Image (cartoon, rainbow over all chains, first blue to last red; front, side, top):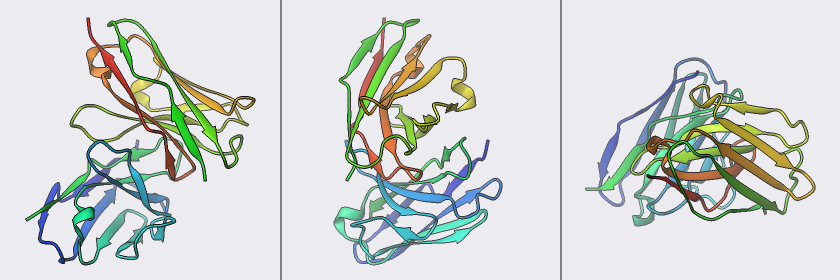
Length: 107
Length: 115
C-alpha cells in the first residue's frame, strides 16, 4: 500500500495570504495525484487532478505541482471560502490511498 | 455532468451487514471508475474500494478484504457497496465517487452501528 503523508497537519493563515501544502508518497505515483477540499458537512470537492490540472470551475488561485513522490498544492491569496481541510489522494493503481489531511484555519 | 444519488441513512446492529446504493445519471457509467470512500466521525477520508462496471472486477483496500463487496448494475446505472460483520468502528459517512480522479461525489450515506 502506498502511504501518503501530508504536512503540516494544520496551517493558521490570515485572509489574503498564500499557502503551500505538501503531500509525499512512499513510492512513485507518477502524476496520478489529486487534491480535494472538504468543508464541514460537505462531500469532498475535486480541486486538482493529474497533479497539476485544475478541475472544472476551480479558481485559478489553486495550483498543483509535483510528480513522482513529492507534490504541493498552492493557494494564493486565501479567501474566506478557502478555509477547509485539504486531502491528497494517489490513484496510480487500484489500491488508492488518501493523505491524512491538512486543515487550513483562520489565524 | 454526473450526478450520484446515494441511498438513505442506516442503523445496524454489530455483526450485521449493510448495503448502500449509488445511482448515477449523466455521463458514461459503464466505463467509469466508481470508488467508495468512508469518513468516520471527525476523521479523514479512507478509500475502501472500487469497480469499473463494464469489467465487473472489484478492488478492495486490504483492511476490508473479506468483508467488503462492491458491485455495479449497468442496466440501472447503480453501484452498490456491501459491508459485513459490522462493528462500531464501521460507523461512518460512506461516499461513492465517479471518475478515475473522483471528480463527482454522492451526497454521502451515514451508517451507524450500535447495539
